[in-house]
Length: 253
Image (cartoon, rainbow, N blue to C red; front, side):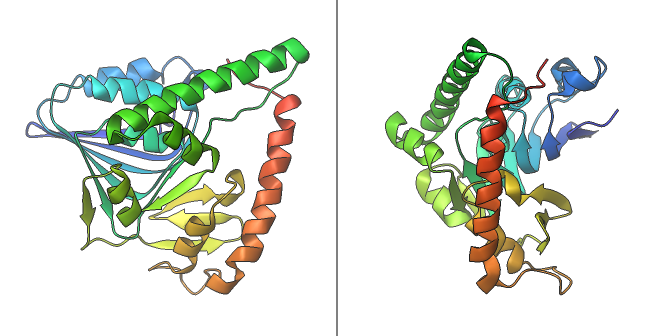
């Protein structure tokens, strides 16, 4: 059963990699759950290095990981090994120290989901998303000391941060100038340090597209920077089409 994380425990120093899609793992089986994550982390002692390269995923699974990491007694250093978008950026906030390579990206936005049922069911979904947004706002506000309304406005706009912008906003403490992120763009997918990210899921992914187009390892197949505006328009339209389907389907357990 696949997981979105991997622990390594060597000589009283533990490392954790969180990569790819962050799943609501309970839908795949009881053997891979937030409890599994907690049990594996319990085997670690001392400093913990967390490496994140993820475009996001299930908000509830991500919150579980964030809360478990916050309770970890050792010192935690988070490294953004490419991109930390959506709920992956929330997980990053659990670090005592957060480090980003100069050309890495972080993104914050409002929660969204799919819905099915009558009007009452849709209202309940909307209320749930509103409550989830407020919880996420609190995580970023506590980390940065920024006013909650300002954070909420940035989330509503789907804000992407370069390392320099994240440092200025208080989302990270250090820029890792000597490390570069390898990136490329083929079709609708950006490949960031080996992890594929579907750009159609985002509304404002211009920086991600430019990062991929200017990637350090694009094999000659990356999209030219001048084409990014056209691609952004296409994926924006697809994003809003997906959001409209919020009122048509839901598959949460």
